[in-house]
Image 1 (cartoon, rainbow, N blue to C red):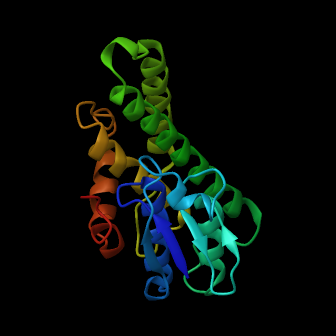
Image 2: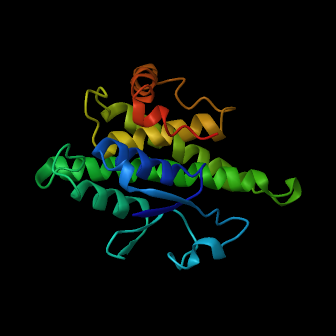
Length: 199
């Protein structure tokens, strides 16, 4: 398999952690394709010009991270990162969606900050910041201990919190959520998270 990736993309990190947790990381070849300076590097496998994109061994092309993670989860029965059915499945997928939404808002802030100061939207940054605060509060109210085998919801949550630390260190989104901070500290020590920390 080939994973088209940008080393600092949190969505790519979620896929890489999933591959490690599933025990299939050695089957995944990393292909650097940073779409920001060069969208052509990835449009051949994703017409949206975004990473991650995965080319499976049989030539099947998959994008975006939720689809790729579900595919990787299907490659081996254990550990199961997404329950197959019932309320537990929908809870994991909902948590992943919430964490991905936090990432979307954080990326929007990062991109806004890269614009010339005179062109930045204070309103857009404020709206995204408040969305992150609400999302983190919702995660804090529902996140359990990391345990021995995190599911995809926990992986996505950890990636979102790590990205906030990495790209928005000036805003302590966990200041009011000490239990979530402790949970994140424990989860970030897992080998899959330690091996994928962005440079």
